[in-house]
Length: 104
Image 1: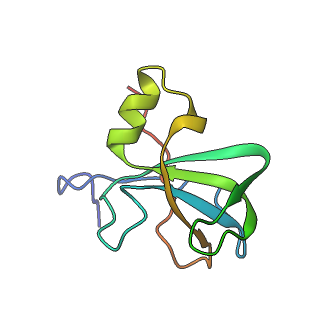
Image 2: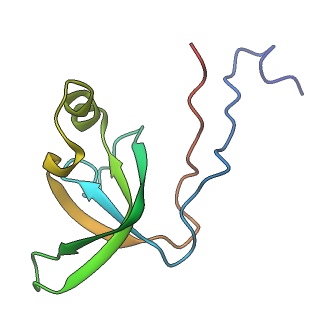
């Protein structure tokens, strides 16, 4: 079946994905049950330490996932460190795939 001929967008999954067991941080808009349709993903060069607000335990993450609103602020010059973090989760491999951006 030719999906493009039917007007459907064909997306390519990125070869870089979180591995099972890795911690992912989410912005405040993407941390709830009503996740946005599209998320922007960042992989850190090294694990970033953070404190969980609920129990004040320490953790570390190598991934950050943010919504379009937070990404627009980042594009305007807001450092990633200033993005409000709403939560973290352990990647189990069943989440959505990270899709490569199509070239303009």
